[in-house]
Image (cartoon, rainbow, N blue to C red):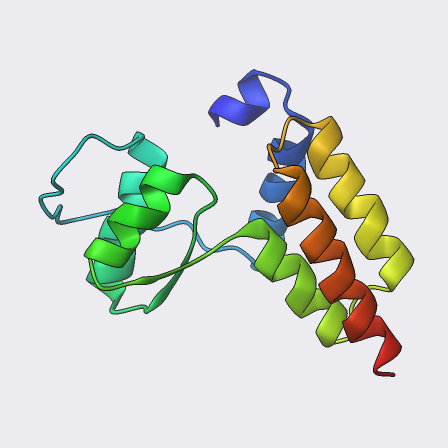
Length: 129
């Protein structure tokens, strides 16, 4: 709801997927204690994963990924999802590069070394075809 109120483009995409049933919204019933403060969204992801007994969580921020690991979860990031989409042939290498560029344009922070490594990995995956 907040994203739509703020007119964030991705919020409309998420709302569309919720209406289609691709994304399911769930309430978090119980909270676990974490050794440090987390953004409410990241904390909710961890709480809900524990509540639903889910092993993998999608979190990009370093602190959230650390908290997920401490909580016994496997944190995955947006780059992992992109690489998986490429492996499963849901997107092409060109699509991969365009999406990665759109992430960066939207403020996704990525060290140059990681950027180069991820592009090399994507190229390797696309060359395996």
